[in-house]
Structure formats: structure tokens, C-alpha cells
Amino acid sequence: MHAPFFGELVFDPLVNCWEGRGSFSNAGLIRVALDSGDLTVEAFLPAARLAFEKLERTEPQHREDAAMKLLPIRNGYWRLDGEPLLDVPAFLSRMTLETIRIRVTGADLYYDDGDLFAGHTIYIDIDEEGRVFQASFEG
Image 1 (tube, one colour):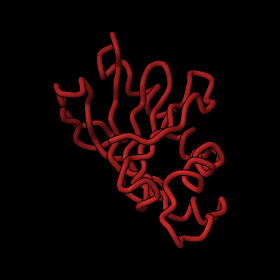
Image 2 (spheres, helix red, strand yellow):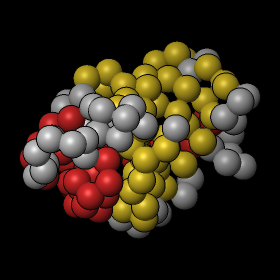
Image 3 (cartoon, one colour):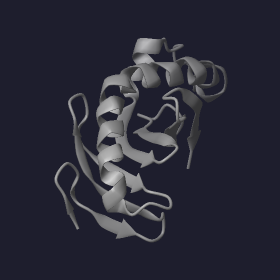
Image 4 (cartoon, one colour):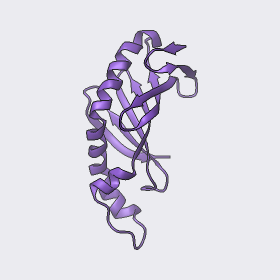
């Protein structure tokens, strides 16, 4: 299926999402997963586009919020012997946005961790109101 904003969409039954691509001004072309819940993907596309456009504006603040939550964990438990303590700008410079999952009830942002957490994916859960609900790492 082709969607004007997200390109060619392919359904992935393993994650129960339609997957395409979107262009972020600060991250280039990234993977986008659309989780339309009980809606058809066609019905969900207008809301998904609006959510994507809003995330493009708010992602830097979400990333900074996540860094503030995860930096003490990185510096306290994941720092190798002899490594300096990181500050927020250094932490942020190592995060690379890879995937956005847009849900009916919010969104999830997935980042390459730049080896902050030994290659684990940094995950930010955005709630329906557009606030960071959770920031963690996984994988």
C-alpha cells in the first residue's frame, strides 16, 4: 500500500504494524511504524501524519527529557573504569533516532544508544498528551 506521506507501507504481522519511512529534519529518513489499533490504516493515516509532524517539533525536548532521566544511570552504573562522567550534551550527541512507532494512544521513539548502554536501544514512550511517560533502554 502506498501512503503519500510515509511512502510504501508494508504490514509486519510480528509487530502488528504498518511500516514505512518518514523524513525528520534532524535525523533524515527514518523507519516509521503505524499501530492503528482497531482502525484501518487508511482511517489512521491523517492522525498519524499529524502525530509525526508534531513529533518532529517536540522530539528534541523528548530526547532531552530522556537524557535527564537516563544520565544518572549511565554515569552511575554503565560507565567503564577510567571513562569520564558524561553531561547532557555529550549524552544527547550519542543518541541517534532510528524508529518512530505512532500509536492511537501516543508514540514510541527508538534510538541507537551510541554505546551508552552497551548497544541497548534507548526507548521513549510518549503518552496521549504528548508527554514523556517512560524513558529506558532495552534489548
